[in-house]
Length: 340
Image 1: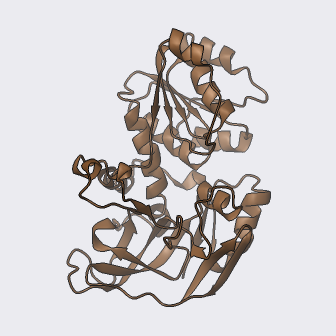
Image 2: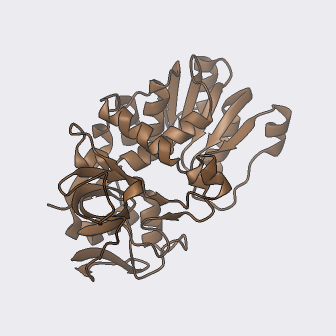
């Protein structure tokens, strides 16, 4: 079979790799669509230390079952499926609480040395597989993972009913966060980003007010529209300026939820946090159950994912698309790689 193999910084090749074999509790899935995550691009550049060459990236994917192990009973050959890609032990104290995202033994497909889905096929344990509703396309099925990240971030903030909410960053996660915040009852959704084209997409996905820090005075806009500050700020970038923005624009006694995960260390105005009693919460990945909840939301038609899909291309075009995303992404938001 063929796969998109990462050999080191900026070295990616569509090449022949050994075929996979499945065990009794495994399923062989023919990959139909896989998303290129921002973390994949950072890994391609060698910036994170979380891609150990040679390896196959890709953790946002859907496909069709080709073969099942002897003990597999929940799916059969020909079934359309998507996969919750965080492999968890099921026995640690976190798993016992349902917090599979915090499992001490977790592995994520396409990260470190665990091969992912940018290939013709992938082997997946049965318990990580979710049937894909007939009305959900393979492309939408590949976006469930990113939507689950956003969903947990919004849930972490608590009730949004009647609240004014700011989403910082209009990349894939930020756009999905804005959409889910609207679905969960936010009275007003603000989105901040440096790209005007992404802000237009944010409006298409439910944002009421969009702001570009290059041109707009965010404090004035928020003060005028939200009476001095938003109730909840959802940070979806993970760098110092956006983390600071989440503190500056939230009201006294408000909540900032950090979803972004780019910088290892940042600087924040600690006195602002202390003297205005701002709550800062972290949100990481999603639980196995939350992944299923998001799939139900998408299956119900409640979420319109199409505005954020910038491009779908054959898997063999992966090396060029990674180079483009790393060097000059332009207006691209979510890029999907597909197999016929």
